[in-house]
Image (cartoon, rainbow, N blue to C red):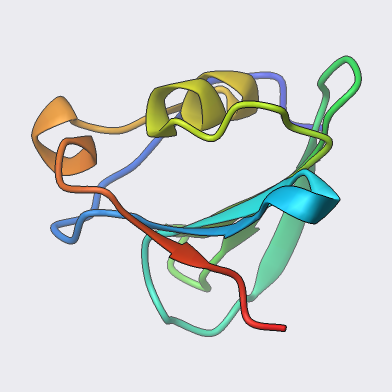
Length: 96
């Protein structure tokens, strides 16, 4: 289980794919291929982080969330990203 803070080293702002009916979000930082997925311990929210082979974060999946701001999603996931990056976050509906 991942108990530490994960830092994002990305030049692209995240895209948050929202499914409010399912109380779920996917915070995408890249379109690289997923090499491994690690769960994050969190109270009542199910969280996993997808990593590329080079160790970079591809995305974060959160299920059971009620608030979808980028700051809240990253805080719950124990992930840090530069504010300059997160200020440019885009929100889109999840694909059905």
